[in-house]
Image 1 (cartoon, rainbow, N blue to C red):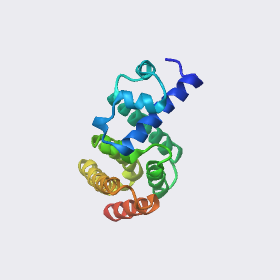
Image 2: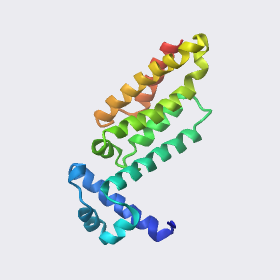
Image 3: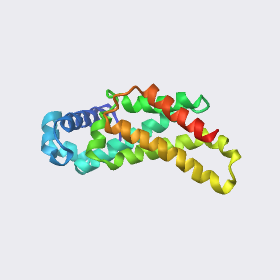
Image 4: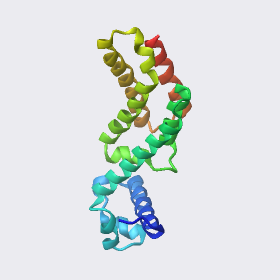
Length: 180
């Protein structure tokens, strides 16, 4: 499907309507009719782009994950705290996408975000694993990233109220202590 200006505008309208509805009601209760009404489009227009609300949610999640990967690529080579903070700031930026509401709609999505985050954590800390026997490196890395993932889950669950820089510093400090 081509992505001209009208298509991008229509998809943006659909997503904005969807996200507005997510703020007001649980995901399973949101209907295509409600989205179309709020976005001021016909149902046939919605179905040109999405199969149903689950498809819309999944594609929105994929878009956010891709955006996060782009952010991490742009911060490769910088210090670890800056990389972690950039990822967390992207998540906390509610104008970018109502991330918190997406997690409420699909609790498994926080695991996908944590997985993406943990991959980046591994790339940041893998050089510090050289003191460990090769057979233990993966386990140590898993231990560090699982702890980081738990901090993220807590942060997500509390509505991401603490600043991203504070969470990034905490994750980095704890990881450095474990790996030193």
